[in-house]
Image (cartoon, rainbow, N blue to C red; front, side):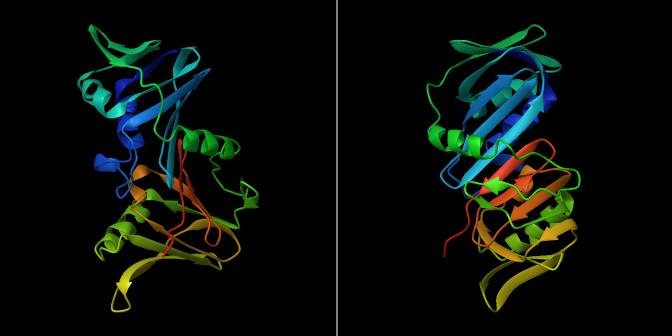
Length: 247
């Protein structure tokens, strides 16, 4: 596998796909190990555990298709020190070169949740970002019943306030083109907020999840939901799916 990519784009992607750190998703058992695959000029980055799957899709200068598994946490500090276009060559090892600098990292034989990645990758193959979402996508044998668009900045502000409750569990109620996000530990310790949404359509639905998912996104996010069903968030270059919280 061979491709070229700007180091700043790569840095953000490697940070995000771990689901940790400044832009991360806490309360998960995501591995530092990630799976990447290249087909043409499309580079896919994947990470997953038993309840959460993350995917980032980047346009790169592709030279040779292939796939590779490596430790993103180990590579990231080197990429942060680089400046300019990085060249990736993945064979028995991964060689990342930038100007006169080069780092070599080992291939990891398998991702600890490779079965989950393979399964979700296939189930989301038909799911793509729509500027004005109209499609209610299938997920397995069932179809999502509602969709709306929110902006990541609004989502982050709302979730930041929900996090002050310190429940770790969040609820989304959607009905009649209105969405309310809330979190509580009891009836007397609760925060809720009506979100500014657009492009809303579909039936009423309620879903609960654990872990703050909002930091994974920038810009517009299309939110797909169905009662007690995995929550699907789709951005321009990324997708996230989270299993519903079970009380």
